[in-house]
Image (cartoon, rainbow, N blue to C red; front, side, top):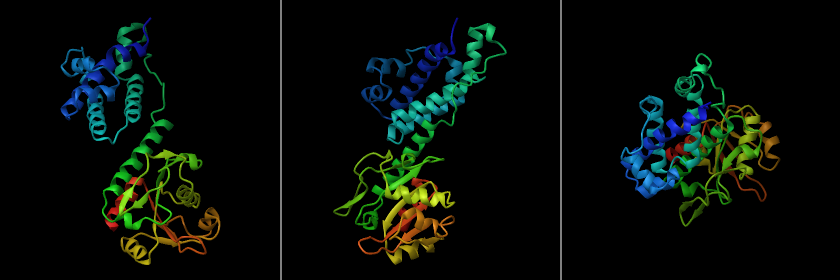
Length: 295
């Protein structure tokens, strides 16, 4: 009796690790760095990279397997993909190949009695974990754009900024990723205090969720310092700006205006309340790109 998981362990993983180790070395990473990323020993990396580990030619020659190895090598090498993200993407491919595909075929060949009944609907490819990891990756890329955009620090409000993005179907603040502690201007430099997490933004995430509740399909938001010239420049880019009452409950205030088609929401402030502009966008990357073009 042989399980499909044994095919994964004995055939897929050695082949895929070998491909990934080889590609990471090609991108200039040291054996030590590759070992840390793959969580294996340096001697194992050497064996993988030098072809001393047997590969399954059918697995290694599959365009999807080779393509994912290239994609993950790029992301892991430049820091845009986390180890968890790489694991999720690999796991998803494995599950896809188990469902009446390559791994199912190899399993059927190893266990002839499975012929004609080799479909394995193990996991949903659109899992919550995958959606969450993609959302975090988008926020990370957006933050990188903001950090490298000269002049963005001057657009940060006194209360600080935050760049947030929600998963496709958010149920609350816990489904919105943002920066813990907010983004600040420190001596003219954009300063991000930590890696993005879910559930750490209250205000900007609340504005995004309120806009979505009003019918807006934006998945990301970024707050900026209020200035009439900033609004003018955003509107000159074809973005639709809508004002709401910043002195009342945010959700109720946004529900009271035509927020469904807004690209920008803003409130002009009040007693003890700083005026703020909220830029809405399809993703955190898009929001950051719009600000980069703005400055």
